[in-house]
Every structure is written in structure tokens, then in C-alpha cells.
Amino acid sequence: MTSADDLHTPVSNEELEELKDVGEASFGAAGLEALIGPDDRKQIADTTVFPNRAIASLLITARDNSRWIGTAWFISPRTLATAGHCVFIRSSGVAGRDGWVKRITVIPGRNGGQRPFGAKDSTTFRSVTGWTTSGNENTDYGAIALPEAFAADLGVFGFGVFTDADLLTVDATVSGYPSDKPGTQWFHSRRVTEVGPQKVFYDIDTVGGQSGAPVWRVVDNQPVAIAVHAYGGVTSNSGTRIDNTVNANLNAWKA
Image (cartoon, rainbow, N blue to C red; front, side, top):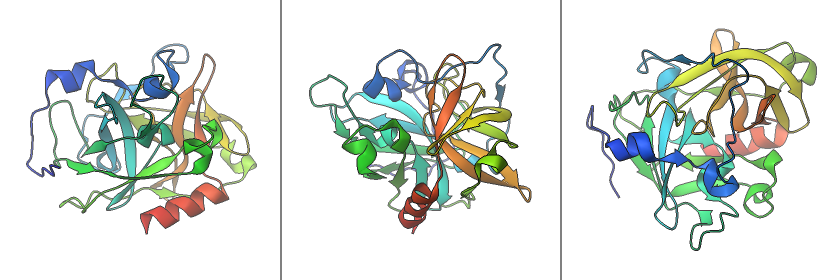
């Protein structure tokens, strides 16, 4: 296992241009995230400032050694929240691929070929049986545990439980690493459109590769996550809502 902290390590063209969204491993190539109308995404120019540096590009190696991309965000110096399908692949139809992934390389604040904070590998992952056993999309969330913290103080996202009424007044943001903009971080903000007991829906533009990205609001000038981005459709994209159970698990995992 490697654990590189050197600055500005180049990333190969294969990593930047050929790897696909890890969601395709479990759900096929139909596309789990979508642009809603015109593409209103904007690129993050400076990935070295918070909260951009607390969002990481993921290079995921599955059990069959196939490679994929995703997104995650720091909830403690050694723990990142992400989608369940970033850490555990289901129903791929490919021999030897399903199950816990073999390795994830975490690259915070990645900007194309630049790794301003280095990269670290993890082989320790968390999710819930609702996802790993049942494939329930309402419980599609997980976590990545690093063997050690990054040398830099990257900062962490807060997260919390909010009422339906409160969430329906919120301008939310999703920021991550889409597959059509290789290795670069993009964001879009828009009002939450609908909430369910375990899901939050929004017409924020996303593209495959942003699976696992934070869906956050601003509270007292700080980013506070309300969901883990995971899915999309023709008229809305959605994330796993941080309800009381998700909140408790994330707090346990970060400890």
C-alpha cells in the first residue's frame, strides 16, 4: 500500500480521462446523476481553501481490479463520508467484482493533475446492511477510514438532522468530481425541491463521478451537510438524507 504526501504528483491520462463513475459498477451505464436543463455547474478555481479542500477525488479499485472514480468529504481528519456504492459494489454481473472494494486512493482538493495535499490509500470502509445486504437506495451511504490523517489541516464538514420544513427553505450545494471534467472539482447550488423520510431531492446539476459528494447548506457561515449525493434522474437528483440513524452512524464512524 502506498501513502504519498508529496505535492503535485502527476496523475496519468488513464486516471484522468478513462475511469468511469463507480455507480456504473452497480447500476450500469444509464447514468445515476444528471444535468437538469442547461448545464449550470461552475468549476472550483482554488481547491486549496476550505471547504473545497475537504472534498476528495476518489480512485477506487474494485475486487476484480477494475478502477472507478467517486467523491467523498471529510467528517474527521481520518474519516470521509461517501456513498455506499463507492465502498461496496452490488449486482455488477461481473465475476469477482461485487463486495467491498479493494482499495480507495483519497486525493483531497485535487485539481486536474495537481494533488496539493498529496494522496493516501485506504482499505478500511464502512456502510450499513441496508445497502450491503439489501441494496436499498435509501441507505446508500458509507465511510472511508484513513490509516493516518493528512499532514495539512484540511478542515471537516459538519452534518446534522433538520426538519422537512427547514430543508424545503434551503439553498443546497453539491460539489465533487464529475467524470466529464476529469480530475477537477465542480459545484452547483439550488433550492431543495422535495424531501422524504430518507431522501433529499434537488434540481442541482451533477454528473457521474460525484457519487458520494456532500449536499450541504450554510449555517453560521459554515458548511453543514444535509445529505450524501448518490442518484439522479430526468427531473431531479437526490441524496441519502442525514436522518437520526445516518447522523448516529456518521458520528460513530468518525470517532
